[in-house]
Image (cartoon, rainbow, N blue to C red):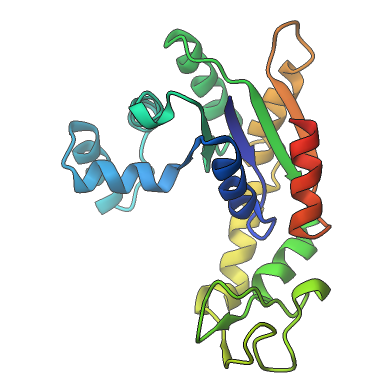
Length: 224
């Protein structure tokens, strides 16, 4: 089972990806990790990508997509994979689709978590980290995991915030890219959605991201 995952920052996409990884024993591949791995290992593609990154430029698709294909063809992906963080626009979606077909790799399912932009932003800015264990879920904007005042709801520990979670301008910039359905990430998702009506095409799943994690997981597993 090969899956492409879409969802805005704050939608719980990473959490759902981790759950699917464990449930179906497939590899959860994040595009950012592919760059880091290639650069650290000094691969030819990694060296080319680093030149662009060091200049502050975007890495061309002609480098990025072969990197992704190489990663998806590794042994740990033989039983399936979940790709997260790419493509980010329609042009990349078209190129990735063509490259997968040329390599004889099937894309089985595309998942889109649908979440109102304001709710997504609030969830990011509402995250609180427990000093005792960062895995203790606390969020001032989610009733199910709302902290006990200014204390961790799990252990009573002190809570802190991540500086990037409170950078509203940066959050808005990322969301500007994601929610753009003309030439942004949603345009990439909709490219596959439009193709899903074709015979033998990819299955397109839409999830309501508003409920809690367990409810979203239940809907996702049922639709898979």
